[in-house]
Length: 101
Image (cartoon, rainbow, N blue to C red):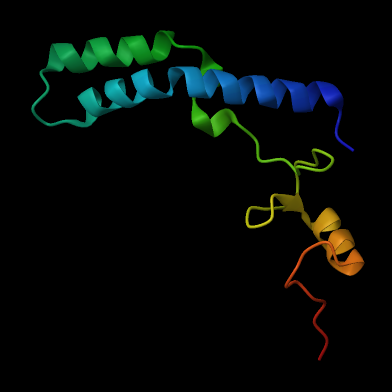
């Protein structure tokens, strides 16, 4: 089980990312576009740098939806490897079965 404070901090980051997502996309498009002038690019870069660090989507950590475990996360299920195995054995994941050969 992950610390409650880490889970809460990650949730707060998700909110901040969502709040700034549209403006960040606009600024990044200005920087990327070849038709932008150097002054426009510089202004866009400055504004991007002034935004909070947590406004970047790469700051959000994928965590297990059951207990918040940050490592061994499987995107398909939204679970960590530990909880995936446990729930698959208990039959909570339809269509998932333990392989043996």
